[in-house]
Image 1 (tube, rainbow, N blue to C red):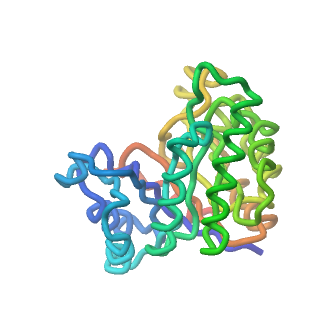
Image 2: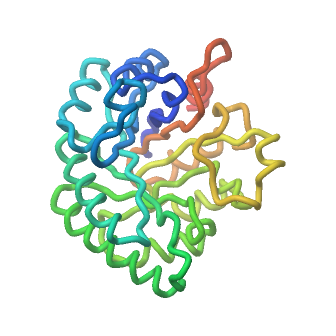
Length: 276
């Protein structure tokens, strides 16, 4: 039986105007055992000034592991989303993210196919994605890093589309980073889709969607950056956890994706932990 852990994606820090280290300490204070940082290329003004949580891959990777060790928390993976359909960006970005993950101790990097060029055909896009994923896999496999493909864009918005991307490169380092909220907003049953991918799961975005959000956007979008707190929306988290514990072949982290940390209401972490 798989063990289920509860982490949080660092997007919850964005509206607090705080840096990565603050976010790690806050996550530990809220009771999470893992964090999922976002990484970027080059230098970014707000991050350098301490007003944004994303970490530059030009920084020392040990910055992440030291901050987590000090807070008594672990890394579940890195949010390394880059357009797989644009290899001039995706190849080198993913390769650097994989090396960064290996050094800081993050077992997974998460990505999706990203926005496509308006002039490429579907067949061309899948050829480009295969090239990007093959290059990334050749760097990830010898380092023991897993690549989590997320349901988030034009091709991965359906179970068949996500499977088609997954099957482009046969490599044990490639798996699924399932996003419950994106699946729901795309018009699918999150539990049914989870059952389809659970054997290939390497990471999970625990994203809940409010009734109001669903009514406004379901079937009109392919995903959303963040959702409401788990337990305040439409996703049945007890059933999600039961599926994971029963059928997932590895221990898994539910990385909560919400807009900000709670101030007075019971936290997403408290709700999820009560269901185990």
